[in-house]
Figure 1: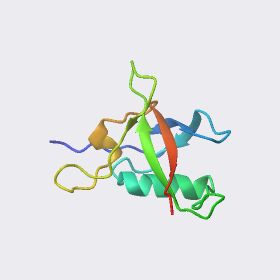
Figure 2: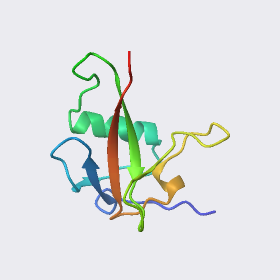
Figure 3: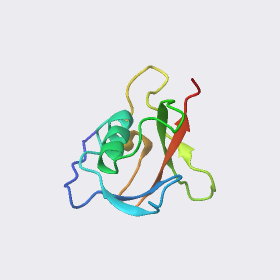
Figure 4: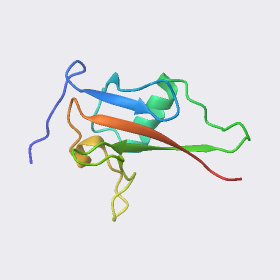
Length: 108
């Protein structure tokens, strides 16, 4: 299978960060082959999102993809059944797609 290469200005997705004022902001994906875990980490850094909630509990962030007929985003797993790290291309995320960053507080 031939690898596809994208250039910085070509791969733009629409990102909504649940619970914030960021709705459908255009975000450049610099490397769609980066793991889902790394993509989330980059988003947290760029948007300066909290790593802890108000109660001091760690926040886990999940990335979801809006599919055509669904109202809820489909959560993108960090790894497949074999434990291999997944990337955006594993989920066929394309430029122009709409992704959701969902925060899940981890109870202490």
